[in-house]
Image (cartoon, rainbow, N blue to C red; front, side, top):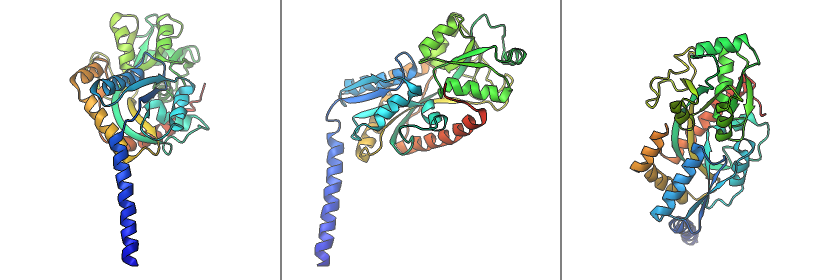
Length: 323
């Protein structure tokens, strides 16, 4: 009797393993939808389209990008969380994904429980940039100006919880200044208004603003990493320019709805790691100021967890709010 029970248990375990392996081998069985919870034009969209194009071109599987901006990226995230966990729906995530876990009093999803990490795709610092008419040439001069005109200076962001928003809120908290937040629905409209002089300054991802700095349409005051960017070595860090200890590194990654089979997660991770090593992809990333990262799903999960804790503390201490 015991032998029959043991045999049955082994048979069931083998069947489950075979089913999981078979599912992994047959993946993908339909087009992969890559949800980008931001408008077209910024690096989040570039990342999604790069992966989609390489999936399709390599024969891994047909893939399409689905831009679903809104509510600080939570609309697209909610859509992904509620999608079938079969690996055919992926979500491009970035810095706001971790911040929103604390910034929003109530989310329609749980940031860690409702998603499975797939890969940490890239990282970049933000640049603090200003309209040429702002009468400052350094971070120290900006701090002095902000303190002399509390509540009169303005900064743009790509929405509450974005790295642009939190970068300035951390700056304000550490410098004890009052600069008014003007949120937009994306980097492109925020930059357009700043270049038009409607808002004075903003922090933004290096690849989004560096071309405009080079053309002279805006000026760069500092970079948010602890070391200078090799793409703009003449620009000091915020830390060395007058705010000791200031640091923000923006990251980008890919997740999927919780419950995706392990074999499928492994296949997606392996394929995207391969894409990140392609010379043309690495050149495209680095020309835009983004360093390809890669690695295991577990490593990205650890990074995401630490970011939720770190920026949750900043959100609470700075009093940052959804606007």
